[in-house]
Length: 103
Length: 474
Image (tube, rainbow over the protein chains, first blue to last red):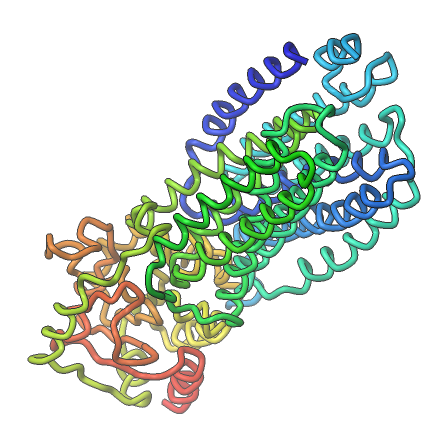
Protein backbone atom coordinates (compact mmCIF):
# COMPACT_ATOMS: atom_id res chain seq x y z
CA UNK A 1 0.00 0.00 0.00
CA UNK A 2 2.78 2.39 0.89
CA UNK A 3 4.51 1.83 -2.43
CA UNK A 4 1.21 2.12 -4.23
CA UNK A 5 0.43 5.44 -2.59
CA UNK A 6 3.86 6.78 -3.35
CA UNK A 7 3.58 5.74 -7.00
CA UNK A 8 0.23 7.49 -7.21
CA UNK A 9 1.73 10.66 -5.81
CA UNK A 10 4.55 10.50 -8.40
CA UNK A 11 2.01 10.14 -11.18
CA UNK A 12 -0.06 12.95 -9.72
CA UNK A 13 2.86 15.39 -9.69
CA UNK A 14 4.03 14.47 -13.18
CA UNK A 15 0.48 14.81 -14.50
CA UNK A 16 0.24 18.33 -13.04
CA UNK A 17 3.29 19.44 -15.02
CA UNK A 18 2.06 17.66 -18.15
CA UNK A 19 -1.36 19.31 -17.91
CA UNK A 20 0.12 22.78 -17.57
CA UNK A 21 2.71 22.21 -20.28
CA UNK A 22 0.43 20.83 -23.02
CA UNK A 23 -1.99 23.75 -23.02
CA UNK A 24 0.39 26.59 -22.20
CA UNK A 25 0.27 28.07 -25.71
CA UNK A 26 -3.47 28.03 -26.31
CA UNK A 27 -4.79 31.08 -28.23
CA UNK A 28 -7.69 33.00 -26.70
CA UNK A 29 -10.22 31.90 -29.32
CA UNK A 30 -9.78 28.29 -28.21
CA UNK A 31 -10.35 28.92 -24.49
CA UNK A 32 -14.00 27.89 -24.54
CA UNK A 33 -13.60 24.73 -26.67
CA UNK A 34 -10.53 23.70 -24.68
CA UNK A 35 -12.41 24.09 -21.42
CA UNK A 36 -15.23 22.04 -22.87
CA UNK A 37 -12.80 19.36 -24.07
CA UNK A 38 -11.15 19.19 -20.66
CA UNK A 39 -14.62 18.96 -19.16
CA UNK A 40 -15.26 15.86 -21.26
CA UNK A 41 -11.95 14.31 -20.18
CA UNK A 42 -12.75 14.51 -16.48
CA UNK A 43 -15.76 12.43 -17.40
CA UNK A 44 -13.25 9.65 -16.65
CA UNK A 45 -15.15 9.44 -13.34
CA UNK A 46 -17.49 7.30 -15.44
CA UNK A 47 -15.11 4.37 -15.14
CA UNK A 48 -14.98 4.88 -11.38
CA UNK A 49 -18.75 4.57 -11.37
CA UNK A 50 -18.57 1.46 -13.56
CA UNK A 51 -16.08 -0.16 -11.18
CA UNK A 52 -18.21 0.71 -8.15
CA UNK A 53 -21.28 -0.77 -9.81
CA UNK A 54 -19.47 -3.73 -11.34
CA UNK A 55 -17.96 -4.77 -8.03
CA UNK A 56 -21.00 -3.98 -5.90
CA UNK A 57 -21.86 -7.66 -5.56
CA UNK A 58 -24.98 -8.05 -3.49
CA UNK A 59 -24.62 -4.73 -1.68
CA UNK A 60 -27.70 -2.70 -2.62
CA UNK A 61 -26.32 0.63 -1.43
CA UNK A 62 -23.19 0.28 -3.56
CA UNK A 63 -25.27 -0.90 -6.49
CA UNK A 64 -27.54 2.14 -6.30
CA UNK A 65 -24.70 4.62 -5.86
CA UNK A 66 -22.78 3.00 -8.71
CA UNK A 67 -25.80 2.99 -11.00
CA UNK A 68 -26.44 6.71 -10.43
CA UNK A 69 -22.73 7.48 -10.79
CA UNK A 70 -22.54 5.69 -14.16
CA UNK A 71 -25.53 7.66 -15.47
CA UNK A 72 -24.04 10.97 -14.32
CA UNK A 73 -20.57 10.09 -15.61
CA UNK A 74 -21.99 9.11 -19.00
CA UNK A 75 -23.82 12.44 -19.22
CA UNK A 76 -20.51 14.19 -18.54
CA UNK A 77 -18.61 12.17 -21.16
CA UNK A 78 -21.18 12.13 -23.96
CA UNK A 79 -22.37 15.70 -23.46
CA UNK A 80 -18.82 16.97 -23.08
CA UNK A 81 -17.41 15.44 -26.23
CA UNK A 82 -20.45 16.23 -28.40
CA UNK A 83 -20.64 19.87 -27.29
CA UNK A 84 -16.91 20.30 -27.89
CA UNK A 85 -17.18 18.75 -31.32
CA UNK A 86 -20.03 21.07 -32.23
CA UNK A 87 -18.02 24.10 -31.19
CA UNK A 88 -14.99 23.00 -33.17
CA UNK A 89 -17.12 22.14 -36.18
CA UNK A 90 -17.92 25.86 -36.35
CA UNK A 91 -14.27 26.74 -36.45
CA UNK A 92 -13.62 24.33 -39.25
CA UNK A 93 -16.63 25.26 -41.33
CA UNK A 94 -15.47 28.81 -41.85
CA UNK A 95 -12.17 28.17 -43.58
CA UNK A 96 -13.16 26.39 -46.79
CA UNK A 97 -15.94 27.06 -49.28
CA UNK A 98 -17.40 30.34 -48.13
CA UNK A 99 -18.24 31.45 -51.65
CA UNK A 100 -21.62 29.78 -51.76
CA UNK A 101 -24.01 31.80 -49.66
CA UNK A 102 -22.66 35.23 -49.10
CA UNK A 103 -22.25 36.39 -52.70
CA UNK B 1 -3.54 -8.59 2.63
CA UNK B 2 0.04 -7.45 2.32
CA UNK B 3 0.49 -9.33 -0.90
CA UNK B 4 -2.51 -7.65 -2.39
CA UNK B 5 -1.27 -4.20 -1.66
CA UNK B 6 2.12 -4.77 -3.22
CA UNK B 7 0.57 -5.99 -6.42
CA UNK B 8 -1.38 -2.80 -6.61
CA UNK B 9 1.79 -0.96 -7.47
CA UNK B 10 2.53 -3.30 -10.34
CA UNK B 11 -0.76 -3.28 -12.10
CA UNK B 12 -2.23 -0.01 -10.92
CA UNK B 13 -5.67 -1.40 -10.26
CA UNK B 14 -7.31 -2.75 -7.20
CA UNK B 15 -7.12 -6.44 -8.04
CA UNK B 16 -3.87 -8.30 -8.63
CA UNK B 17 -3.01 -10.88 -11.19
CA UNK B 18 -2.14 -11.34 -14.85
CA UNK B 19 -5.77 -10.64 -15.74
CA UNK B 20 -5.06 -7.03 -15.02
CA UNK B 21 -2.56 -6.65 -17.81
CA UNK B 22 -5.09 -5.78 -20.49
CA UNK B 23 -6.97 -3.17 -18.42
CA UNK B 24 -3.68 -1.66 -17.25
CA UNK B 25 -2.46 -1.41 -20.83
CA UNK B 26 -5.78 0.10 -21.91
CA UNK B 27 -5.49 2.70 -19.14
CA UNK B 28 -1.96 3.57 -20.18
CA UNK B 29 -2.92 4.07 -23.82
CA UNK B 30 -6.03 6.01 -22.78
CA UNK B 31 -3.89 8.33 -20.64
CA UNK B 32 -1.57 8.97 -23.60
CA UNK B 33 -4.59 9.73 -25.77
CA UNK B 34 -5.84 12.24 -23.19
CA UNK B 35 -2.49 14.04 -23.18
CA UNK B 36 -2.26 14.08 -26.98
CA UNK B 37 -5.90 15.13 -27.19
CA UNK B 38 -5.39 18.09 -24.84
CA UNK B 39 -2.27 19.11 -26.74
CA UNK B 40 -4.13 19.08 -30.05
CA UNK B 41 -7.10 20.89 -28.53
CA UNK B 42 -4.91 23.88 -27.87
CA UNK B 43 -4.17 24.62 -31.52
CA UNK B 44 -6.91 25.67 -33.99
CA UNK B 45 -5.77 23.42 -36.81
CA UNK B 46 -5.71 20.21 -34.79
CA UNK B 47 -8.40 20.96 -32.18
CA UNK B 48 -11.16 18.85 -33.64
CA UNK B 49 -8.98 15.76 -34.00
CA UNK B 50 -7.78 16.36 -30.45
CA UNK B 51 -11.30 16.10 -29.14
CA UNK B 52 -11.81 12.93 -31.15
CA UNK B 53 -8.59 11.36 -29.86
CA UNK B 54 -9.57 12.12 -26.26
CA UNK B 55 -12.96 10.51 -26.97
CA UNK B 56 -11.27 7.36 -28.27
CA UNK B 57 -9.14 7.37 -25.11
CA UNK B 58 -12.30 7.44 -23.04
CA UNK B 59 -13.78 4.50 -24.94
CA UNK B 60 -10.56 2.53 -24.43
CA UNK B 61 -10.54 3.24 -20.71
CA UNK B 62 -14.14 2.07 -20.46
CA UNK B 63 -13.42 -1.13 -22.42
CA UNK B 64 -10.42 -1.82 -20.21
CA UNK B 65 -12.64 -1.41 -17.16
CA UNK B 66 -15.04 -4.06 -18.44
CA UNK B 67 -12.12 -6.50 -18.59
CA UNK B 68 -11.13 -5.98 -14.97
CA UNK B 69 -11.32 -9.16 -12.94
CA UNK B 70 -14.21 -9.48 -10.48
CA UNK B 71 -16.38 -7.18 -12.54
CA UNK B 72 -20.03 -8.05 -12.72
CA UNK B 73 -23.40 -6.42 -13.27
CA UNK B 74 -22.50 -5.77 -16.92
CA UNK B 75 -26.14 -5.50 -17.82
CA UNK B 76 -26.75 -2.82 -15.19
CA UNK B 77 -23.67 -0.89 -16.34
CA UNK B 78 -24.80 -0.93 -19.96
CA UNK B 79 -28.32 0.12 -18.99
CA UNK B 80 -26.98 3.01 -16.90
CA UNK B 81 -24.72 4.07 -19.78
CA UNK B 82 -27.68 3.99 -22.14
CA UNK B 83 -29.76 6.07 -19.73
CA UNK B 84 -26.98 8.66 -19.57
CA UNK B 85 -26.14 8.64 -23.26
CA UNK B 86 -29.56 9.48 -24.65
CA UNK B 87 -30.25 12.75 -22.78
CA UNK B 88 -26.56 13.71 -22.97
CA UNK B 89 -26.52 13.28 -26.71
CA UNK B 90 -29.86 15.02 -27.30
CA UNK B 91 -29.03 17.97 -25.05
CA UNK B 92 -25.62 18.42 -26.60
CA UNK B 93 -26.90 18.16 -30.19
CA UNK B 94 -29.92 20.37 -29.78
CA UNK B 95 -28.66 23.18 -27.61
CA UNK B 96 -28.25 26.51 -29.36
CA UNK B 97 -24.73 27.75 -29.93
CA UNK B 98 -25.40 30.72 -27.68
CA UNK B 99 -26.27 28.38 -24.81
CA UNK B 100 -23.03 26.36 -25.06
CA UNK B 101 -21.36 27.83 -21.95
CA UNK B 102 -24.17 26.79 -19.61
CA UNK B 103 -24.23 23.34 -21.23
CA UNK B 104 -20.55 22.91 -20.40
CA UNK B 105 -21.38 23.93 -16.85
CA UNK B 106 -24.27 21.47 -16.62
CA UNK B 107 -22.18 18.53 -17.82
CA UNK B 108 -19.39 19.60 -15.49
CA UNK B 109 -21.85 19.45 -12.60
CA UNK B 110 -22.83 15.90 -13.58
CA UNK B 111 -19.16 14.87 -13.38
CA UNK B 112 -18.91 16.46 -9.94
CA UNK B 113 -22.00 14.64 -8.70
CA UNK B 114 -20.61 11.40 -10.11
CA UNK B 115 -17.37 11.83 -8.15
CA UNK B 116 -19.40 12.59 -5.03
CA UNK B 117 -21.47 9.40 -5.29
CA UNK B 118 -18.43 7.24 -6.05
CA UNK B 119 -16.57 8.61 -3.04
CA UNK B 120 -19.59 7.87 -0.86
CA UNK B 121 -19.62 4.34 -2.21
CA UNK B 122 -15.93 3.95 -1.44
CA UNK B 123 -16.68 5.21 2.06
CA UNK B 124 -19.38 2.61 2.56
CA UNK B 125 -16.91 -0.11 1.59
CA UNK B 126 -15.21 0.65 4.87
CA UNK B 127 -12.06 1.92 6.46
CA UNK B 128 -9.95 -1.12 5.54
CA UNK B 129 -10.23 -0.19 1.87
CA UNK B 130 -7.58 2.49 2.01
CA UNK B 131 -7.12 5.86 3.71
CA UNK B 132 -10.04 8.21 4.36
CA UNK B 133 -8.55 11.43 3.01
CA UNK B 134 -9.08 10.89 -0.74
CA UNK B 135 -12.66 9.74 -0.15
CA UNK B 136 -13.47 12.78 1.98
CA UNK B 137 -11.83 15.10 -0.56
CA UNK B 138 -13.77 13.41 -3.35
CA UNK B 139 -17.04 14.05 -1.56
CA UNK B 140 -16.25 17.71 -0.81
CA UNK B 141 -14.80 18.63 -4.24
CA UNK B 142 -17.49 16.69 -6.10
CA UNK B 143 -20.32 18.30 -4.12
CA UNK B 144 -19.02 21.85 -4.49
CA UNK B 145 -18.55 21.28 -8.23
CA UNK B 146 -22.01 19.81 -8.55
CA UNK B 147 -24.08 22.59 -6.96
CA UNK B 148 -21.69 25.36 -8.04
CA UNK B 149 -22.05 24.28 -11.67
CA UNK B 150 -25.82 24.02 -11.36
CA UNK B 151 -26.01 27.59 -10.02
CA UNK B 152 -23.72 28.79 -12.84
CA UNK B 153 -25.97 26.95 -15.30
CA UNK B 154 -29.06 28.58 -13.75
CA UNK B 155 -27.52 32.03 -13.96
CA UNK B 156 -26.52 31.73 -17.61
CA UNK B 157 -29.81 30.09 -18.53
CA UNK B 158 -31.74 32.91 -16.85
CA UNK B 159 -33.32 30.67 -14.20
CA UNK B 160 -31.52 32.59 -11.46
CA UNK B 161 -30.78 36.32 -11.50
CA UNK B 162 -27.50 37.03 -13.26
CA UNK B 163 -26.87 39.90 -10.88
CA UNK B 164 -24.36 39.35 -8.13
CA UNK B 165 -26.43 38.47 -5.06
CA UNK B 166 -25.26 39.87 -1.78
CA UNK B 167 -26.36 39.26 1.77
CA UNK B 168 -24.96 40.22 5.16
CA UNK B 169 -21.96 38.36 6.58
CA UNK B 170 -21.44 36.60 3.25
CA UNK B 171 -17.76 35.87 3.74
CA UNK B 172 -18.20 35.03 7.43
CA UNK B 173 -20.95 32.51 6.61
CA UNK B 174 -18.75 30.83 3.99
CA UNK B 175 -15.83 30.70 6.40
CA UNK B 176 -18.01 29.10 9.08
CA UNK B 177 -19.29 26.65 6.50
CA UNK B 178 -15.76 25.73 5.54
CA UNK B 179 -14.87 25.14 9.19
CA UNK B 180 -18.00 23.02 9.64
CA UNK B 181 -16.93 20.95 6.61
CA UNK B 182 -13.52 20.34 8.16
CA UNK B 183 -15.15 19.47 11.49
CA UNK B 184 -17.60 16.97 10.02
CA UNK B 185 -14.79 15.40 7.96
CA UNK B 186 -12.82 14.99 11.15
CA UNK B 187 -15.85 13.64 12.98
CA UNK B 188 -16.50 11.05 10.28
CA UNK B 189 -13.04 9.60 10.91
CA UNK B 190 -13.01 9.96 14.70
CA UNK B 191 -16.58 8.91 15.44
CA UNK B 192 -16.66 5.59 13.63
CA UNK B 193 -19.99 4.64 15.21
CA UNK B 194 -21.86 7.36 13.37
CA UNK B 195 -19.43 7.71 10.42
CA UNK B 196 -22.19 7.36 7.87
CA UNK B 197 -24.22 10.17 9.43
CA UNK B 198 -21.20 12.49 9.41
CA UNK B 199 -20.55 11.71 5.76
CA UNK B 200 -24.06 12.78 4.84
CA UNK B 201 -23.64 15.96 6.92
CA UNK B 202 -20.34 16.58 5.14
CA UNK B 203 -21.92 16.19 1.70
CA UNK B 204 -24.85 18.47 2.55
CA UNK B 205 -22.52 21.18 3.87
CA UNK B 206 -20.32 20.94 0.78
CA UNK B 207 -23.37 21.09 -1.50
CA UNK B 208 -24.47 24.24 0.35
CA UNK B 209 -21.01 25.77 0.01
CA UNK B 210 -21.16 25.31 -3.78
CA UNK B 211 -24.42 27.27 -3.92
CA UNK B 212 -23.36 30.07 -1.58
CA UNK B 213 -19.99 30.50 -3.26
CA UNK B 214 -21.38 30.97 -6.78
CA UNK B 215 -24.61 32.93 -6.09
CA UNK B 216 -22.81 36.20 -5.31
CA UNK B 217 -20.91 36.16 -8.61
CA UNK B 218 -22.29 38.09 -11.59
CA UNK B 219 -23.20 36.60 -14.97
CA UNK B 220 -20.31 38.20 -16.84
CA UNK B 221 -17.81 36.42 -14.59
CA UNK B 222 -19.43 33.00 -15.08
CA UNK B 223 -16.83 31.83 -17.65
CA UNK B 224 -14.12 32.13 -15.02
CA UNK B 225 -16.34 30.39 -12.45
CA UNK B 226 -17.09 27.52 -14.82
CA UNK B 227 -13.40 27.16 -15.54
CA UNK B 228 -12.62 27.03 -11.80
CA UNK B 229 -15.34 24.43 -11.22
CA UNK B 230 -14.07 22.48 -14.22
CA UNK B 231 -10.63 22.08 -12.69
CA UNK B 232 -12.34 21.34 -9.37
CA UNK B 233 -14.16 18.38 -10.94
CA UNK B 234 -10.87 17.31 -12.51
CA UNK B 235 -9.32 17.26 -9.07
CA UNK B 236 -12.34 15.39 -7.69
CA UNK B 237 -11.82 12.74 -10.38
CA UNK B 238 -8.13 12.51 -9.45
CA UNK B 239 -8.73 12.03 -5.71
CA UNK B 240 -11.44 9.49 -6.48
CA UNK B 241 -8.78 7.74 -8.56
CA UNK B 242 -6.55 7.75 -5.48
CA UNK B 243 -9.31 6.14 -3.43
CA UNK B 244 -9.87 3.47 -6.09
CA UNK B 245 -6.21 2.98 -7.05
CA UNK B 246 -7.11 3.73 -10.61
CA UNK B 247 -4.31 5.23 -12.68
CA UNK B 248 -6.48 6.36 -15.58
CA UNK B 249 -8.63 8.43 -13.23
CA UNK B 250 -5.64 9.92 -11.46
CA UNK B 251 -3.92 10.91 -14.70
CA UNK B 252 -6.97 12.23 -16.55
CA UNK B 253 -8.33 14.02 -13.49
CA UNK B 254 -5.02 15.63 -12.65
CA UNK B 255 -4.44 16.68 -16.27
CA UNK B 256 -7.78 18.47 -16.29
CA UNK B 257 -7.24 19.92 -12.83
CA UNK B 258 -3.87 21.37 -13.83
CA UNK B 259 -4.79 22.45 -17.35
CA UNK B 260 -8.06 23.89 -16.06
CA UNK B 261 -6.26 25.94 -13.43
CA UNK B 262 -3.89 27.40 -16.00
CA UNK B 263 -6.80 28.03 -18.35
CA UNK B 264 -8.59 29.91 -15.56
CA UNK B 265 -5.60 32.16 -15.11
CA UNK B 266 -5.27 32.72 -18.86
CA UNK B 267 -8.96 33.62 -19.06
CA UNK B 268 -8.69 36.06 -16.18
CA UNK B 269 -5.75 37.68 -17.92
CA UNK B 270 -7.64 37.97 -21.22
CA UNK B 271 -10.62 39.51 -19.43
CA UNK B 272 -8.44 41.65 -17.20
CA UNK B 273 -10.07 40.27 -14.07
CA UNK B 274 -8.36 39.13 -10.95
CA UNK B 275 -9.22 35.58 -9.93
CA UNK B 276 -9.48 36.54 -6.27
CA UNK B 277 -11.88 39.33 -7.10
CA UNK B 278 -14.06 37.04 -9.17
CA UNK B 279 -14.24 34.31 -6.56
CA UNK B 280 -14.45 36.49 -3.47
CA UNK B 281 -16.32 39.30 -5.20
CA UNK B 282 -15.72 43.00 -4.85
CA UNK B 283 -15.80 44.05 -8.46
CA UNK B 284 -18.08 46.93 -9.37
CA UNK B 285 -18.46 48.42 -5.93
CA UNK B 286 -15.86 51.17 -6.04
CA UNK B 287 -16.57 52.83 -9.40
CA UNK B 288 -20.26 53.50 -8.82
CA UNK B 289 -19.74 56.98 -7.34
CA UNK B 290 -17.64 58.01 -10.32
CA UNK B 291 -20.28 56.70 -12.69
CA UNK B 292 -23.00 58.81 -11.12
CA UNK B 293 -20.82 61.89 -11.27
CA UNK B 294 -20.04 61.39 -14.94
CA UNK B 295 -23.68 61.04 -15.84
CA UNK B 296 -24.57 64.39 -14.32
CA UNK B 297 -22.89 66.72 -16.77
CA UNK B 298 -23.04 64.68 -19.97
CA UNK B 299 -25.77 63.46 -22.23
CA UNK B 300 -26.11 60.57 -24.62
CA UNK B 301 -27.39 61.39 -28.09
CA UNK B 302 -30.12 59.12 -29.35
CA UNK B 303 -30.66 58.19 -32.98
CA UNK B 304 -33.50 56.51 -34.85
CA UNK B 305 -33.12 53.31 -36.81
CA UNK B 306 -33.80 55.09 -40.12
CA UNK B 307 -31.03 57.61 -39.54
CA UNK B 308 -28.70 54.74 -38.63
CA UNK B 309 -29.62 52.96 -41.83
CA UNK B 310 -28.82 56.05 -43.91
CA UNK B 311 -25.51 56.51 -42.13
CA UNK B 312 -24.45 52.95 -42.81
CA UNK B 313 -26.08 52.55 -46.21
CA UNK B 314 -24.04 55.42 -47.64
CA UNK B 315 -20.82 54.65 -45.83
CA UNK B 316 -17.77 53.20 -47.53
CA UNK B 317 -16.63 51.13 -44.61
CA UNK B 318 -18.48 49.83 -41.56
CA UNK B 319 -16.85 47.91 -38.72
CA UNK B 320 -19.20 45.84 -36.57
CA UNK B 321 -18.23 45.24 -32.95
CA UNK B 322 -20.33 42.39 -31.58
CA UNK B 323 -20.48 41.89 -27.83
CA UNK B 324 -22.18 40.19 -24.93
CA UNK B 325 -25.54 41.85 -25.71
CA UNK B 326 -25.59 40.34 -29.19
CA UNK B 327 -24.91 36.89 -27.80
CA UNK B 328 -27.66 37.23 -25.20
CA UNK B 329 -30.18 38.43 -27.78
CA UNK B 330 -29.06 35.69 -30.21
CA UNK B 331 -28.81 38.28 -32.98
CA UNK B 332 -25.89 36.72 -34.88
CA UNK B 333 -27.99 35.67 -37.90
CA UNK B 334 -29.51 39.15 -38.18
CA UNK B 335 -26.09 40.77 -38.07
CA UNK B 336 -25.02 38.58 -40.95
CA UNK B 337 -28.15 39.55 -42.89
CA UNK B 338 -27.47 43.24 -42.30
CA UNK B 339 -23.88 42.76 -43.37
CA UNK B 340 -24.95 41.09 -46.62
CA UNK B 341 -27.40 43.88 -47.43
CA UNK B 342 -24.78 46.54 -46.83
CA UNK B 343 -22.26 44.65 -48.94
CA UNK B 344 -24.76 44.54 -51.76
CA UNK B 345 -24.83 48.33 -51.64
CA UNK B 346 -21.07 48.38 -51.96
CA UNK B 347 -20.28 49.03 -48.32
CA UNK B 348 -17.24 47.25 -46.98
CA UNK B 349 -18.20 45.46 -43.75
CA UNK B 350 -15.81 43.87 -41.28
CA UNK B 351 -16.15 42.45 -37.78
CA UNK B 352 -13.86 43.41 -34.95
CA UNK B 353 -13.63 40.56 -32.48
CA UNK B 354 -12.27 41.34 -29.06
CA UNK B 355 -10.61 38.28 -27.51
CA UNK B 356 -13.25 38.12 -24.76
CA UNK B 357 -16.29 39.22 -26.78
CA UNK B 358 -19.41 37.19 -26.06
CA UNK B 359 -19.95 35.03 -23.06
CA UNK B 360 -16.56 33.38 -23.04
CA UNK B 361 -13.24 33.86 -24.76
CA UNK B 362 -13.64 32.68 -28.34
CA UNK B 363 -17.41 32.41 -28.03
CA UNK B 364 -18.13 35.22 -30.52
CA UNK B 365 -16.11 33.51 -33.26
CA UNK B 366 -18.16 30.38 -32.76
CA UNK B 367 -21.45 32.29 -32.84
CA UNK B 368 -20.67 34.25 -36.00
CA UNK B 369 -19.27 31.20 -37.72
CA UNK B 370 -22.55 29.45 -36.94
CA UNK B 371 -24.39 32.28 -38.71
CA UNK B 372 -22.18 31.66 -41.80
CA UNK B 373 -20.22 34.87 -41.52
CA UNK B 374 -17.20 34.24 -43.75
CA UNK B 375 -13.97 33.73 -41.85
CA UNK B 376 -11.90 36.52 -43.53
CA UNK B 377 -14.42 39.09 -42.26
CA UNK B 378 -13.71 38.25 -38.63
CA UNK B 379 -10.67 40.19 -37.55
CA UNK B 380 -8.72 40.00 -34.32
CA UNK B 381 -8.13 43.07 -32.25
CA UNK B 382 -4.54 43.52 -33.45
CA UNK B 383 -5.56 43.24 -37.10
CA UNK B 384 -8.55 45.56 -36.99
CA UNK B 385 -7.40 48.31 -34.66
CA UNK B 386 -5.34 50.17 -37.33
CA UNK B 387 -8.38 50.11 -39.65
CA UNK B 388 -10.74 52.12 -37.43
CA UNK B 389 -9.18 55.36 -38.75
CA UNK B 390 -10.62 54.64 -42.20
CA UNK B 391 -14.02 53.43 -41.01
CA UNK B 392 -17.04 55.67 -41.53
CA UNK B 393 -19.13 53.88 -38.95
CA UNK B 394 -18.28 51.66 -36.01
CA UNK B 395 -21.44 49.73 -35.10
CA UNK B 396 -21.23 48.51 -31.51
CA UNK B 397 -23.80 45.86 -30.67
CA UNK B 398 -24.12 45.09 -26.98
CA UNK B 399 -20.46 45.62 -26.20
CA UNK B 400 -19.29 48.01 -23.53
CA UNK B 401 -16.09 47.48 -21.58
CA UNK B 402 -14.16 46.23 -24.63
CA UNK B 403 -14.54 49.63 -26.33
CA UNK B 404 -14.14 51.80 -23.26
CA UNK B 405 -11.34 54.30 -23.90
CA UNK B 406 -10.85 54.57 -20.13
CA UNK B 407 -8.81 51.37 -20.43
CA UNK B 408 -6.23 53.43 -22.36
CA UNK B 409 -6.42 56.74 -20.56
CA UNK B 410 -7.78 56.50 -17.02
CA UNK B 411 -5.29 54.90 -14.69
CA UNK B 412 -7.91 54.89 -11.91
CA UNK B 413 -10.38 52.76 -13.87
CA UNK B 414 -10.74 49.10 -12.87
CA UNK B 415 -10.26 48.10 -16.49
CA UNK B 416 -7.16 50.28 -17.01
CA UNK B 417 -4.62 48.39 -19.07
CA UNK B 418 -7.07 46.03 -20.71
CA UNK B 419 -6.49 45.99 -24.48
CA UNK B 420 -9.55 47.47 -26.22
CA UNK B 421 -10.95 47.95 -29.70
CA UNK B 422 -10.32 51.51 -30.91
CA UNK B 423 -13.91 52.20 -31.87
CA UNK B 424 -13.48 55.84 -30.85
CA UNK B 425 -11.13 56.32 -33.83
CA UNK B 426 -13.93 55.76 -36.34
CA UNK B 427 -15.63 58.80 -37.89
CA UNK B 428 -19.02 57.88 -36.43
CA UNK B 429 -19.98 55.49 -33.69
CA UNK B 430 -23.39 53.86 -33.35
CA UNK B 431 -24.12 51.95 -30.16
CA UNK B 432 -26.97 49.47 -29.89
CA UNK B 433 -27.61 49.03 -26.20
CA UNK B 434 -30.46 47.81 -24.03
CA UNK B 435 -30.47 50.71 -21.58
CA UNK B 436 -28.57 53.68 -20.31
CA UNK B 437 -26.93 51.91 -17.42
CA UNK B 438 -23.27 51.10 -17.11
CA UNK B 439 -21.98 47.66 -18.06
CA UNK B 440 -21.70 44.71 -15.70
CA UNK B 441 -18.56 46.11 -14.20
CA UNK B 442 -20.41 49.31 -13.32
CA UNK B 443 -17.86 51.40 -15.18
CA UNK B 444 -19.08 54.42 -17.06
CA UNK B 445 -18.07 54.50 -20.74
CA UNK B 446 -16.93 57.93 -21.96
CA UNK B 447 -17.27 56.78 -25.55
CA UNK B 448 -21.05 56.89 -25.23
CA UNK B 449 -20.95 60.63 -24.47
CA UNK B 450 -18.67 61.70 -27.30
CA UNK B 451 -20.15 64.07 -29.91
CA UNK B 452 -19.68 61.55 -32.73
CA UNK B 453 -21.47 58.77 -30.87
CA UNK B 454 -25.15 57.99 -31.36
CA UNK B 455 -27.17 55.61 -29.19
CA UNK B 456 -29.83 53.27 -30.53
CA UNK B 457 -31.55 51.92 -27.43
CA UNK B 458 -33.25 48.55 -27.52
CA UNK B 459 -32.75 44.82 -27.57
CA UNK B 460 -30.02 43.89 -30.05
CA UNK B 461 -32.25 41.57 -32.01
CA UNK B 462 -35.15 44.03 -32.32
CA UNK B 463 -32.83 46.90 -33.22
CA UNK B 464 -31.10 44.85 -35.90
CA UNK B 465 -34.45 43.80 -37.33
CA UNK B 466 -35.43 47.45 -37.61
CA UNK B 467 -32.12 48.37 -39.21
CA UNK B 468 -32.52 45.64 -41.79
CA UNK B 469 -35.99 46.89 -42.71
CA UNK B 470 -34.71 50.44 -43.00
CA UNK B 471 -31.67 49.54 -45.09
CA UNK B 472 -33.91 47.52 -47.41
CA UNK B 473 -36.08 50.62 -47.88
CA UNK B 474 -33.18 52.88 -48.82
